[in-house]
Image (cartoon, rainbow, N blue to C red):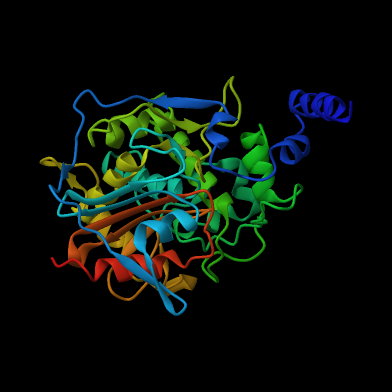
Length: 371
């Protein structure tokens, strides 16, 4: 009887449109969230690209855990990994799946989507929808101009130095991140944006910046008479040209008139995520076409500590070391890691971090491969 009552309460909370209710029913974010939220489709490309595969897969045989050597496959499985790919010179050298996953299984990106949004901003500048990163947010979202956003530039938002007042917590049902993740009123929530400090003073990683980038992109398209959704723009500029192989999607806040959760929630299999890394490995060029401007790729993956920027973060990409590597990263341990010096891309998808410092693992794996 108690289970039946709980089921009724859960159904009522979900159908009520209550963000807090959905937080407690879905609690917490997990890798099946793409099944819970409405989305816009990203169809397979008409010209799919398939990586070459090594005749004999070559990956690490073992890893040291404490004072003992553990087989690498077992290490991955024991630490909540569901997919792990090593792509060297555009060839799959190692590929493993666990817990029922396979090359076609959809997995949500979480915050890896932030790096994709950065790619799209670079495309929009090249396409003339946006003049430059020096444009103020107020040019695109004038309703925020009287709150100081006329002094916040697009670059501030890309760098997470905007000074946005946003609580980056998924465990607080009343926090900003949970409200954006589980809520159905992203437009309304963004209308309430405020600043807590002047732009350019300090780096602070908050997802509200990435959602604001999505709104800026949408407004930039509309201003030029382009009615494409952010998903459609992604499909046209990157997804289809990259030769994505499987039906994928981008989660939106609600079915009718919804907008993309641009701070998260692109849903795709591991190999298709890898192509995003390969694109940047090749400085934005893919199959003879410059999909993202080379200068944008270089700007997005180079250290810059000016105007409050952080050494380890650039234009929505993480820079985990001083060795030129960079990565897209999502909660629960989702990664697309790129090491240009070794012509290497690594994808790790997981149900959780599993208590592992994955960037260190990636750098250790990369040392086994030469340019």
